[in-house]
Length: 126
Image (cartoon, rainbow, N blue to C red; front, side, top):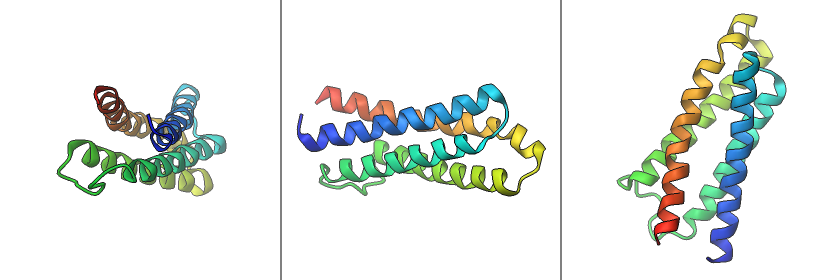
């Protein structure tokens, strides 16, 4: 394993830890708090950084015909929308929006797991 691969995997795993902690803490409390939003943004930034580093290892990092690249791009865009929406809800949203936000969070998190575990399996298989 190269240093770049290890660094990339570490960044992506930090994304998993931060994003998951934000999603599950918000889901358990059923109320969106500021620190959840910070965890979403931190997870997103680690994911972007890890994806960028992984892209340095690829011959064609923007090949959307590749299933892993496509699912990864979808997940990143969903994470970005999720973090922006969470920020708006915490700053300006109603109490009802704060209480209902967890429904969308879990869907985005589950979609995000597809490229995470797909990439892990690809890395382990060679």
